[in-house]
Each structure stands twice: as C-alpha cells, then as structure tokens.
Length: 263
Image 1 (cartoon, rainbow, N blue to C red):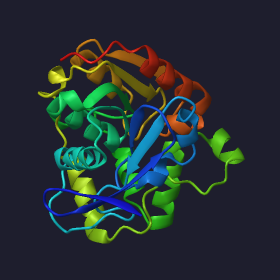
Image 2 (image 1 turned 45 degrees about the vertical axis):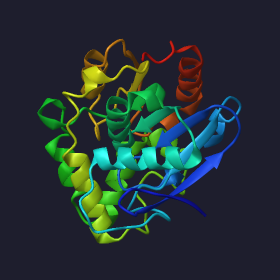
Image 3 (image 1 turned 180 degrees about the horizontal axis):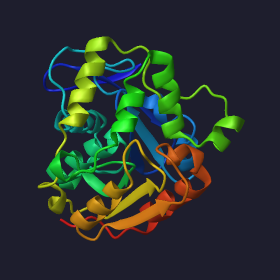
C-alpha cells in the first residue's frame, strides 16, 4: 500500500495506475477508490488514473476530527505533492464533484481540465433531494440499501448486473467516519467560489437523478465561467457506470480537446 501524509499527519492511501497524463478520479461520499473499479480501465488508453481513499475510508487513516470538502481537497493536494505532480485533470462525481470544486477554485494551477459529475454547488443555492428520498434512505438498513441501489441505477440495468456494487458506501468505515463524511457533504457551499474556477469544465448529470437532483447541473454550468453542460437521458446517479459507453468517451474527448488552463 502506498501513502501520502497530509500536513495534519493523516495518512492517505492512493492508487496510481496506467500510463500517460494523470487523471484524478474522486469518488462519492463515504466511498473509497473502488467506486471507480467498473470504469477505471476505460480511461487507460489515453490516461493514467490516480485515485485515493478519503480520510475515513479504505486504507487511509480514520481520525475522529471534523471533515470538510475543503479538507478533502487539501488531501488531494498532499497526494499530488507527494507524487511530484504539478497539475492534473480532475474528474469528481457526487461528493467527489464537491471536492473537485474546492480543488479547482482554491488551487487553480493544480487543475488542468475539470469534469463535475452528478454533483451540486451545495448551500442555499443547491437543489436538495426530495423528502421521499430522505425518508427512504433513513429507513431500516436493508430497505435503505435497496433504496440507494435504485437511486443509483435503473431497474433494467440492475436486472442484468446483480453486483457486487461498489457505489453503495465503504463497508469498512467506522460509524464516526460515516458521520464526518455526511457532515462534510451537507455543509459544502461553493457558490461564491465557483466563478473563480478557471479550468475548462464539463458538467455531467443523468436526467433521472433523484439522489442529487439534475437541476444542480445547470446551476454549476451557469456559475462556472465557460462551463459545458451535458445531460445523459434516462440515467440515474451512477450514470458513469450504467452509461459508461456514453459517459467515458465523452469525458476523454473533452479532456483531449479542452482549451488549456487559464493562468
């Protein structure tokens, strides 16, 4: 296992695979790098991929201290510094997209091109999931797991893909880390930061995403200078996996043709 150490002494496990320019892949809330397992290799014909286990997940340390999307972004910077990577393209989905917003706004020279998937600006401007979704996710464990599965994928896709599914949370997380991750995601508010993002940006979202409502995609695209918006018809929260044949080539084409980062 390979680790980078953050300024506060936390060890962050990371995984670097493939060859070529680096693409950082950032997973959703309470998930480790396995979130990307199903699609990671799709990027390797053109890119190497760098993932990490957020603090609290996977093989990283799990301190019971306050977490935030800004802190997670600083952890990404610590990994890049450890590897001697001055700048990389970044693709964040769900909470990973919130972390990517912080990274691109606060460390603009570290981000080449930016892809934000199924994510939100957070705060009072973000569109919250419905009360019916909240109730379903707060139910008994097995019912909540099934509800999350159906928010991630369409019934048709699930019928042909029985799992295991790596987007439903890290089963090895301690309870305190789950609480810390939830608080970090819930407290995210990048609205004032978004206009500072200078990286070429692509915003992706499934049209049938109820876990993170699709309306957030337009908010992000309108707020980030020059951002492009692409909606994937019929896709739910895990569009990047279910619609991989659509989303993967779209992301690679964007990364290949994006205008270089503004200084």
